[in-house]
Length: 241
Image (cartoon, rainbow, N blue to C red; front, side, top):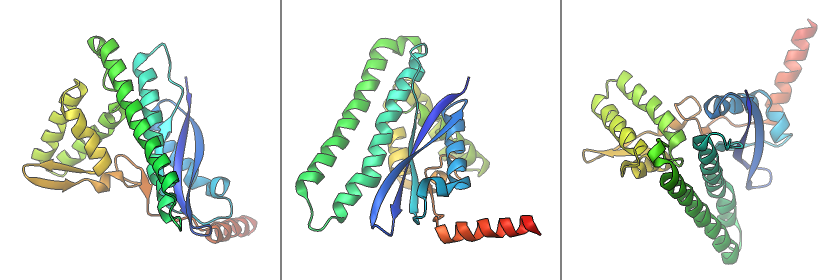
């Protein structure tokens, strides 16, 4: 049965000079299918979400849904993804907007950073409760369950590129992290910093986070209403010929 998934996108609106966020919803079988469907929905119908305003620096902050109490992994994962989505939204929208404010409002900035810290604390609490109640039943850390899925795709891509040592190291970290080992933090760092530190070197993983990467969270494509309108007019004229 399909579930409703909500994608929170952030973007920069040049005309008003600030970062904004919006929500796109789709029906999908799971969160992984939903991520791709959310991008496709936005790309197919940008005018529904950006209206007549140009947009750049478009990013997907996260995918959220109503977790099922009949599936504790799904239930805790949904709570974790809600925290991570808000963390990304704060980092992509609220905090950058405060930094752009002239003169700066230190009280507002402190409030945003306090909210950010609160979400991280909540995410940690979700993991702690899941571990204490369900680790013995095989639950995977909710804070990285989604990341483990996409990390496997990254490892597979590294194997195809013959980066065997790096791929094997990522595989080992995933296995340990899924068992609540210390590598859980390394998986979180990979998705936050977008690089892997291995054998004394920093290995950039940025390409995996682009629109055509394993874990699409950003696109270099900018939305321009004029282009969309011109395209629509061209389609209409083509249909009339």
